[in-house]
Length: 338
Image (cartoon, rainbow, N blue to C red; front, side, top):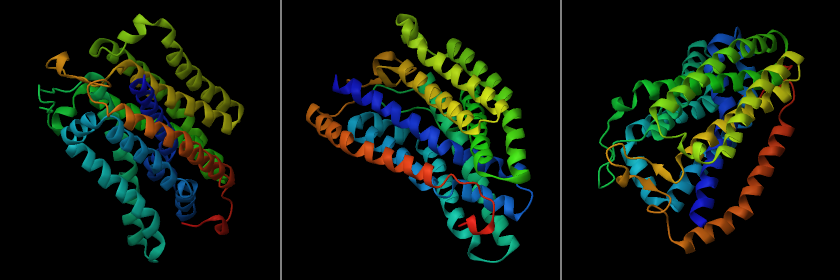
């Protein structure tokens, strides 16, 4: 029972991270296409500036839960995907440093350098996260010792790349909606128009990803056995449709909320499809890592659950306060910190 609870919490942490850091990554990816001047660039930085470091807490939490609740899965995942995870880490470092360093020197070339780092540090994590999770859904060539036999280039298979492109587009849509909430003037208009153009691309990509998932993985197995689980997929569809309808109606907060529901349900759809596996072996199903053969002791899981019940609501409260406090429109230079 405890293993199942922590597996679901693990999935929820990833879902929340994708929702919250997704709009940061999306805005950074879109910056070269949306920002036409210095004020536009600063608007994009400040639209995400008060949130990006808090959003990373959920990434650390998801990694920490993997380590503490499922240590064998953590060891296999972080060693087997070492190169990809190091690229992800360096990209996130570039993005974080760009926030702090960009305005330290009054130089166009200096700012252009950090703008490029910000874009790369936003695009690459979105791509790598999509590639990584697509490969987790498909499975990895784990041997009997739970050692991954695949290299970095093996992860860049058609299904993995489709997952990467899908994540980039999904986060870009999410980021465009958030920028539409916070930006003003022409930048707001461009953000809305970009979101309208990205929506059909996301729709096509999610349909293609689901179709490929159906024929390329065993992810739909749990859903066929328990059809009520398709409510997760139905909620994802409803969120995506609601995002477009509210966008057309000019209700930007509701459109962003619809996008958030879509992203969270896509993540949960994959996690629930994996259950009870965490890492699937494509060489031999018996060599897969599940919540049962990779979990910590019952005492460890009980202690962690108590800590989580106390501190997770605190973090959620902080995130809600930050979103409410720093979601004002960026109209003037004095609104800018970065």
